[in-house]
Length: 360
Length: 248
Image 1 (cartoon, each protein chain N blue to C red):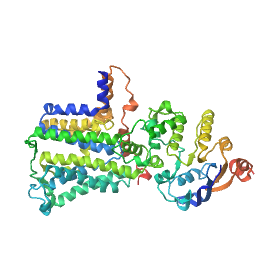
Image 2: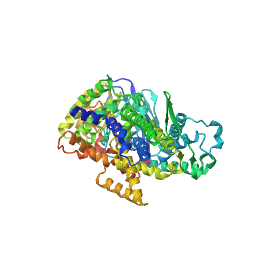
Image 3: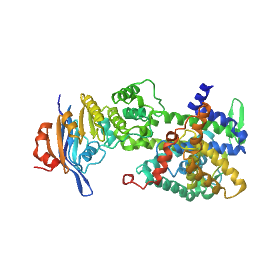
Image 4: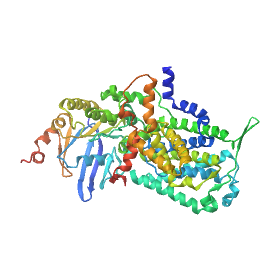
């Protein structure tokens, strides 16, 4: 039994997969379950830069939006828009996904290369500025992007193999389709963060000048982490547009960037699956409060403040050490120092600190 | 044992908005040497160090390392060429374990971008990390975070990390600062052991340390080199005495 418990602690992905296989049964409705997966992936992608690289990006909506528009623009039946590139359009689910991911990756590479020239609050402000730039560009370029109304009429696909045709416009089918991508992405992230690259990027986060003195190329490491984050955010965005069959301009809005920060803090940035937990909580709370009142954001805001003040490690940062202790049947003192996620200190203090001269 | 010129600077200068911290310094260190840099507070020792390790850009002047000009090269480039350094104010990776701290210092930069690789156990890198942890007596603390170490232990970690990059030239900034006499003695022995196959430049305040371990001493005063020579010569130098004791 203990061996089994240890297995789950070392391999949280198995637990994740087990839970999300049955999640649609307990979620209020299927579409919400799928949204949880998509935003969970997005929050995990954001956390690659936030916790693991110590970079507080305030403009992650850019890569989510680029993923969505990249996936949507290549599809032919997004009506009323994209006449300019009509001859390039292909009706393929896979090409659409690849386009979304690639566009987000290219965006992250270009924007990251510029923003990473500055540190701390200046970096955050630059990422925000670039995201807003894309937002207004998407509005202005309405012949291509549909402006305020976004891309509408994204076609529904079905998966054909071995003589079977699985329609993806059936919500439960799309849920499991998404789960495969999200599961694979999380496994890839875990591998990347456990690699020598993952180690190097955490060293850069902790102490940039020391990492450089050890021979590590700080700028290139940060840029690669930023691009990885952009690629996974792009996948989330592409899945989102295929799910809702509309690419809304709101995806580019700064509030999407704010949502992903809230999700990450709510769930706990310091544990691997924390951001995912946060995304699930955020969306379920949003949907429940939304039934009661249109001022739902007031309630979510209150919950977030309570979490940040009383459990700065987030829900999973608080829960995980206690679950482990309960499993082992030990009333072990929970080591306060170590259960506190480094990122909660890093990311937040970076924003609240007065700008340092070296940041500029 | 003392060989060719390893590091050379020519009219090296660093200004901070008008204040000249390092003023046209010509400096030379030969291979195998253990050189100390001493001087009163504010003499420009640490700034000079930061220029040598490219932690700070030079205002003017040039630096050569092993015959190659390295003026303006980025810090990570210099580290790869074989210049390692430790810091006066302890400067590790606080949220990583002691083992990870030394491993990341020892990790060849060619591994940095292998994001699909895993750390093999055992491997050359793990062996090297363990060897260094043994040298600096931190094997028992490997699983602790750097932020959980005591001051003396952090100073030893500092040395271990400096060794991780396999430097041929090691710059040590006050390796015994704030240490008790016993800890100082241990560190001196450690430095002498390391110095056998390396060139070392160290900035130090404690005269007994400098006088016992060093081959040659350079004295800084107001951003310039005041005097240079063997410990005996420096001890006998009247200018140095004036700067340190205010007497003539």
